[in-house]
Length: 164
Image (cartoon, rainbow, N blue to C red; front, side, top):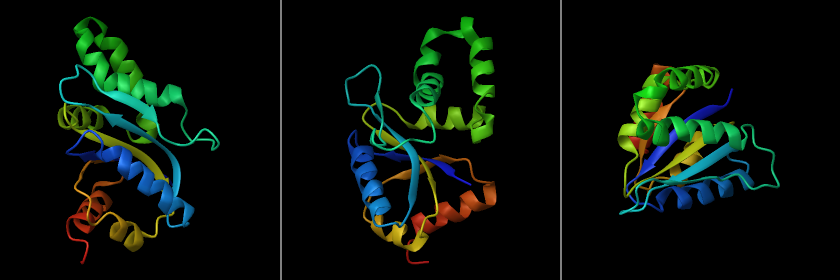
């Protein structure tokens, strides 16, 4: 099963760098990147810039419509007001197959803000110790995953204390 993870970086370019690192790890066969997207929100901008980060030569597990819908729910729908609340609920409901619920959307919306960036990665088959080692010097926070809470806690602990 693929895991959707959202990592927040304290700079607007941190997610881009992490995406490149993740693709490099995939080339080394240390993780399989099913799909990923990057959100970069530069200081002074009203809204973030988004892009699907999997090269177009690869077929992503999720398409641009999925990422567009997800980012719309997280970053752009709140700006449109409560008049489309029912539509937002219906759209969000269609994403529960991926473990994306209202809580997931709320967490990401609250934490990915101006001056930060986020990497949305759908991955599987990770060689965890090697991936953790590759990211040990990166500053990021795990915002959300679609893992069961026990597995999510373990993942957070691994990245907070890589030597454990």
